[in-house]
Length: 189
Image (cartoon, rainbow, N blue to C red; front, top):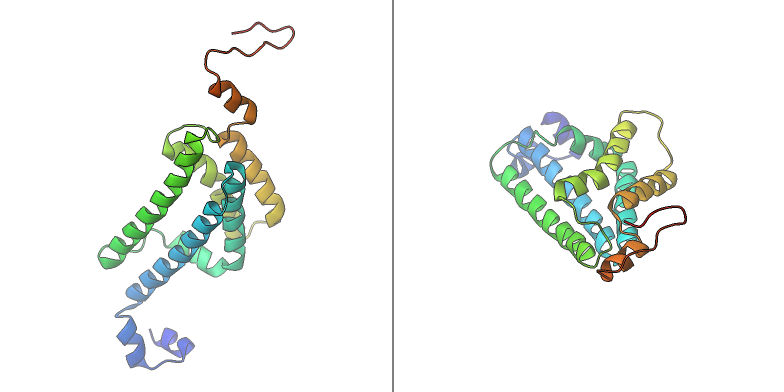
């Protein structure tokens, strides 16, 4: 705490008035960081009515945010299980619940309008976030990584192929009972 007090250029009393311990300070930093990240992620998603652009927007937000807030991103990745129990844990659970509810509502609307495939939520999350989180792990570990714009394009393209419904598929689903014509040399199913 003495190092923190010195770097903050605060008195010992003012630091302890705000934070009772290093663990309390660490939990507050974690909550502030994850809250800021989630707010930006949701803003990027909810600005987009189009499913494909929404997917790209959250991937771009994530990759840019990590580069801009590298030390905080590293802290969030390393300390995600160390928040402990008590008030900070309850606040984190509530923060995550609000985040997940808003994200789920956007994705449910896209599924209902047949822009995204219907699938279990855990699989959809893994297909969307798994690749960009792995790219982030590599970046934060110091490995050479693809430039943000190029990585965004590649990851968003892969996520869209996994999650998105192409226009032709939507049209076919909207006309139940109609069969698509088989390509030459192929039998219709």
